[in-house]
Image (cartoon, rainbow, N blue to C red; front, side):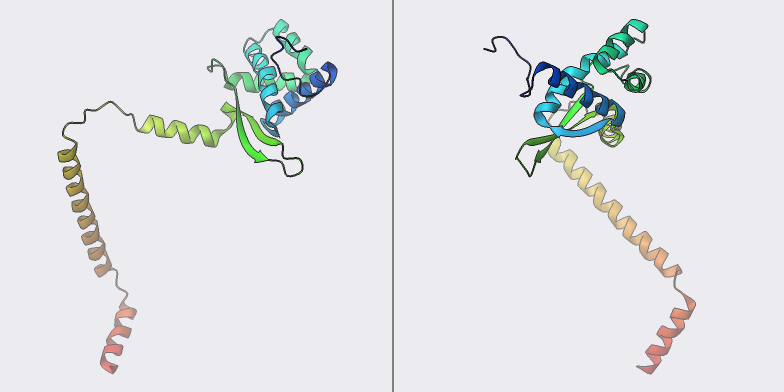
Length: 188
């Protein structure tokens, strides 16, 4: 019976499960992003997040504790030097799981697990929008009048741009092209 056993056993004995999570952790620390099944990704997140929290305090004791779980000097070095520096300000939630569909062979649900702070594309896209457009709460009164004024301003700006383009095009005419156009008009 599994009374009170809350973690996923992943269909393996304790030694095999421990080795699997250790190898997945090392791969994730090394590559910062891996693809695996959804169940393994969720189990890996539960396994690895406390180790990342432990890596924030760079002491001999915390290095030995993390080494006990990983058994890989290179991964421990990477975790304490590179990763802990990036996640220092984050209070938790270091890993992100993104579902990627189903595996063709057996239909297992696949997922990509990655460190949140190492995905620059996603972090910059979200961070840029939030910092550039600070939204405040506004009342709903006067919405129609403000909308009409904004629409009028927009059309005026568009008309000015069209007029500027026409003025630029008049001065940019090529002299050779003008001669050819004159000859065509004479011939016609």
